[in-house]
Amino acid sequence: MNRPASFVFEHNRLTDTDGIWIGGLRSLRVNPLRVSYNLAVNIGRYPHPTAGNCCVQFLQLDHVVTPAGKAQWNHTQNLPGQSGVEDNINLYISGGTDSTHRFDIGHNLIDGAYPRTRNPEFTGGGIMLGDTGGGHGLAHDNTVVSTTNYGIAVNGADNYATNNLVVNDGAEQTSSFGQAIVAWPAVSPARVHATGTRYNWRRSTTDATQYPCWVSTYCSGTAVTTTEQQARHAWEAARVAAGVIVGPRTD
Image (cartoon, one colour):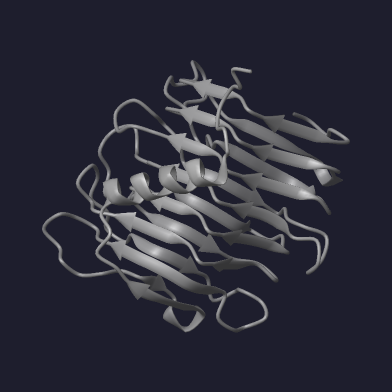
């Protein structure tokens, strides 16, 4: 959507289609902005007839600033060979207005990010904060599974990730440089920006090495033995316990 004053997208199902794009040519203030309780299946499945599928996301913000932004309790489910998503959630030069009004990305299950054809240098992944700029974002209590190149990426100013579970076994797609967390050296201020991460991140089924973070100076976390399927089950149990309905309501 081009330059909306406000945007609320809740309790929807997206299947075999592109996701949500919100933006404009210059910094756009959107209030409120909520994308929550949605189920998205196989984002970017069908190639565009003229432009291919570069940069298709479940949620893409482009030059957006919001004092009341939330993306919570969404479930994205992308299957290899049936989807074409790059970053599931991408904040491109976008975020909150200040440290007390962050763009809040929490309690989502981000499941799957794969290239259209097998490619170990695929650059897509889970949640990207501060892509090329933008700040005041927070990704917390998310479960990110099987997103190949990265689980959560933190860039820009005053962006943080905390208490997230990121799991990748490399079975669906190997990766040449995958990491659970990517915290770019450009993060500002220069301190730990990803804390409390629980990770079980491998680049392939034949590589037993854990890849918790790049660059490690800006990350802290704990290795776990949680499998991809266990992570999915745990998120579903948490959703039920919280009384949250994802996707269209039936009442």
